[in-house]
Length: 138
Image 1 (cartoon, rainbow, N blue to C red):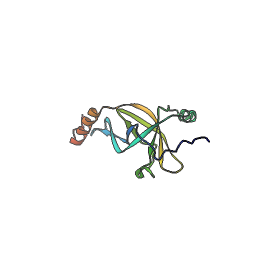
Image 2 (cartoon, rainbow, N blue to C red):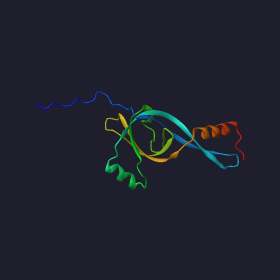
Image 3 (cartoon, rainbow, N blue to C red):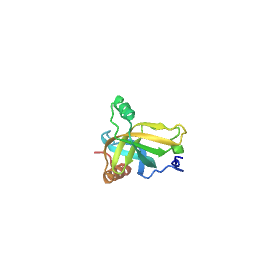
Image 4 (cartoon, rainbow, N blue to C red):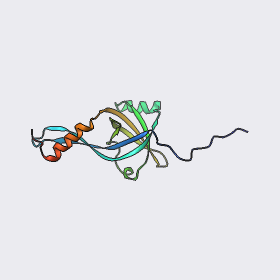
């Protein structure tokens, strides 16, 4: 008799945490672009996933490159929200969301991410303080 491996009781999201949100352009009083601020909407634990060949092909058809694929639990706040215009931050790297898929049971989200660069929290804090103080005219 062949022994069967038991199915996992729960899913493990122990590869880290991502922060998702949108960016807002900060402008001076004269309209000059000063920078962009990341407005966080929440954080999710994630599990790194292997990108399949069809995932890579899909990203290529959209003229993007698939740098990272992660799976997260589906939070209620993202059920009816447009997820494709989100930005994701993991550690000190920022990613554009290429697309987001839900599983058939609507329990998990699969984020397909393209790296757009890093960010400096101190620089962002300085920009936020400048914007909050109203000292935006140069």
